[in-house]
Picture 1 (tube, rainbow, N blue to C red):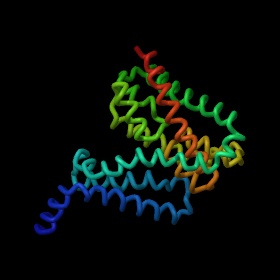
Picture 2 (spheres, rainbow, N blue to C red):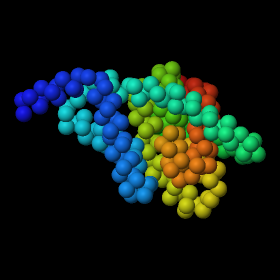
Picture 3 (cartoon, rainbow, N blue to C red):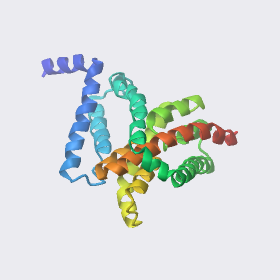
Picture 4 (spheres, one colour):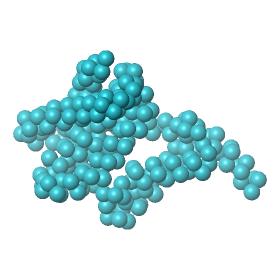
Length: 238
């Protein structure tokens, strides 16, 4: 047992250990999601987070130690966001035909996401720096962290809020669309990407390729629009 403990102490100081733990947690989570036929509640991101959190708790590993290795995944958020331009190019003809309703939905969705966060948080008396971190909750993590840091918020808190928003959206989007009887995969995907960023986009791809493509388009466009609107919206907090 002493030898095993010594090995664990050595490995726990190796940054790549936590990268491996993160990737393996997602592989296990994806297997679970597949076994449940991709049920909305079996969201692989949510399951992977739960698995990783349990491991960190059991090993009493500080977040800073974990992030030292997991930051490699964080680094890939930027390139992954840029790659979302690919579905925009592949479906450019369909996008052009649906441009007006897409832009209308984009503007309304971005404004509602920002305004709802700012108004509710202000009404509850939440401190300004926390509100700033909450504001970009519906954009992808890398962009949200950048917006929060630029406006004086906490990037780490922003990342947590973004993930909670994404997981909630990823779970609710399919049942909600079914209840509303929305069958157009373009609309379903665009709504998922707009409200639930990367997690919603991943869920949309699991349901339908067209839905996933339009979710990726919404994710990218919403990140761009929110980066412009957020600084303007935050000025009303002063």
